[in-house]
Length: 68
Image (cartoon, rainbow, N blue to C red):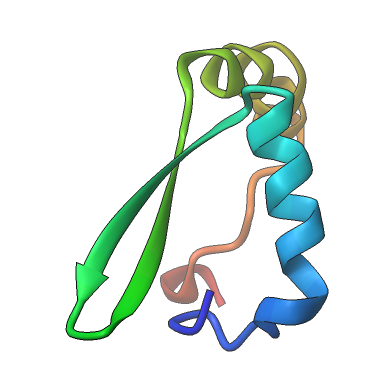
């Protein structure tokens, strides 16, 4: 989330809920004295994306920088 500039405190609840609903996988990684949480999409999350979001993306594709 820090790479995207998102506030960890505000968005952690959303990510925790997505992990609980098995849409995301969370792994922990030690980094010195700190713990880093890494998230990636689960198989269930991919299925939902393909069923719900992908048809929307197909209907309304995002503009490429080259298309402007």
